[in-house]
Length: 512
Image (cartoon, rainbow, N blue to C red):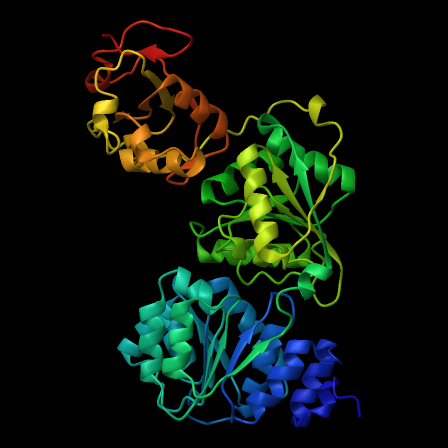
């Protein structure tokens, strides 16, 4: 018998029948290694790139080992970082428990009706949830973990990044000592290793593919485009390649909304997905995308966790991911289940190119240049707008700049540049200085006085640094807002206007 086949495992007829309905026959490498270990009662650390069948690797044995109970004793609990991933896992669990009567799977997460969750938990053998809502039910006494046999931590590194470390520890301490614990993580930072040492018993460390299998199925390209035509270049790329179904990633919620509006205004069926949207709306968007009612989904990294829609032809990175691991998760949304896919990363300035090189170095990915012909004929984008913010009518906030303010004090050669965010957008001087240090790579002491007005702020810099900031920060964000840095007009606030007169080379200079 072929050892790669699911029917070679010691699984019940009900589970095998459900697996057959799903269309699975042969196991992926990580499934072949993990499922037998879990069925034998062992703890596991699973390290594998997305799209390799990781969910089924724990869902199948979890359903197999769950026993129907009249009173609905919870025996399996799965923790996931986001609602979307929790819902995806639940869908998988229900597929495999289809013929196992009396086994019920329930999803719990924030934003969902708590009364309905409490009712569902009364008869739930398998619970999948986000850490915060799981703890909420533990405190309410509506989720009891006394009979837990198996705990699964999915995408543990992401839960760590989202600040769930203490929640995870608390939940694990609430579970019986005699249990199995499975942990899945793309990376293994020190804090994750400490969790395994504290809460797992001699776990087997399984590396399904060392992160390379997904890359082998995905052709990866980068496109260099003019900064001013970045959004229109995305539409041109989709037109040139005849891409019908795509997932586009942005780094901020504001950019997701702005780009979605731009594409829909130009006749494309696009929808946004990010954390500020109500859960009912997010669920509807995902349903529409899976069913083909929407063919372009524009999302942030966190909101896209758990997206498992088939037939995604291409991943487009509108923004360079802020973390290397995000790149792996992003492109893993195509090239799934043995199918080939493509990923395109849009490059619009030198800083983004260097970030791309860093991704290649750290992941081992090889990206080919894709020459997008016709960008010079495109009109400039008209999307430099951010979300509406209510005016807070705050007084202007002034920062004295970096560690060496004397460098800027009454220096006649200094100039002013402006940025189109202020107190109305909850901006503080540290937000602006932090963005300049991040994108323009200036040191703190190179940044002079920062004055925050109602809707516009002003930064004092040397002429050389001012030119550098305006050039290198053409697609920068400040506290999540897409912004424009430019030569300053006369400041509109009393506190910032005194002492600035005249114009020299397009910049406002301080008087001697």
